Image (cartoon, rainbow, N blue to C red):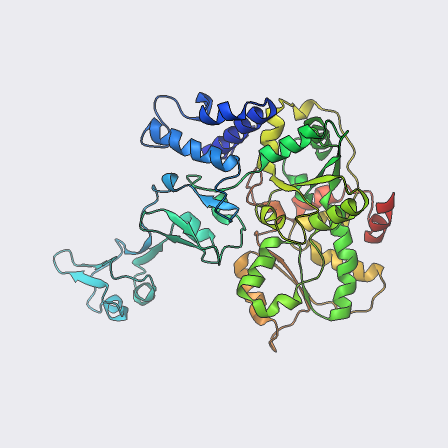
Length: 475
């Protein structure tokens, strides 16, 4: 079975692997300054113009694997030296141009950026004058003018990415919601998330096997669709072998959320969900007037972490999931004291390999904390169903009219309807990733997952009711 989707994914894994092994063996400094040969291509580089540039880029990747630029507050960084292979984007006139007499494109342009070459009998765009408004493209009857954006620009639905004079991508801190779409879409791996894998390893090592303090892994419900041939129960065993004292489902936090959120909705009459940190950030940055509509509940990750931390103050909690925005969430004032770090599934994969653990050969360990409804939070619509179930189990008579949205473009359209006569819903579930967390940017594979994939794992939960899962917490 093919393990890595792309060469970028493999290279990222190899860098994380070497950093993890160096941390485990207490020789991180030596490994950092000496880039292992196995990380870079051989004498004939496969991705760059020369081996020297390749090594320079790998070194930048290693810096990100060690936490990145401390002065850059964003969890996502652009490796400038790696971001120079994409062609300059913007509107360009293609071969479909017929050099027509109407020349509607020229008349539509208010910046005189389009001119007509009589010898070649076709139009051209002066990039110095063009402001990429798109008026010419809309005017052309042959669809000869197309907007060629870089993959990172196309994927960023909040327009946080622009191209600088150095031909490298820039991230606008005020607009970025840390969704990670640009990280997943960059064909050169020039945009990456910072890693705190070394901090997690040190935390586990210093716990002395849990004797000093317990280190608890809180795994996202989307873990159920990460590996095709390996059951989650074997991954739990692998987490124990890595050094985690125990493993808990974030889905149990989802049960807590839906238990309280259904009550809150019936009391307030209108809510937007608070589970997806990128969605919450999007509201706060683009729809500030709706910030008061956001549910007061913490996310499932933070909810179960708070429950544990309140009862075991000495414990340290590490979230594991497909999400980059979670790395930003753990910095928030209301979360930073209850969750220490957030790891992605990519980082977990590298960590397991660093300890040379063959997951497939391991025995199975039980993981059955949450209900079916807690686990379906992994996909779009799961929270909506869970809130409906919560209202039912609480026996609350409420006219529940939910709207389920995934993907920023769909979310934007829904938010524009709030507080208008056209608003026909009173609960808005928003997930930044299309289809939900099961399609997160740091998933081990990016085959588009759906409801069937997620619900197969969710159905294996022995508890079918939310209230039962919440009551079982004390046990």
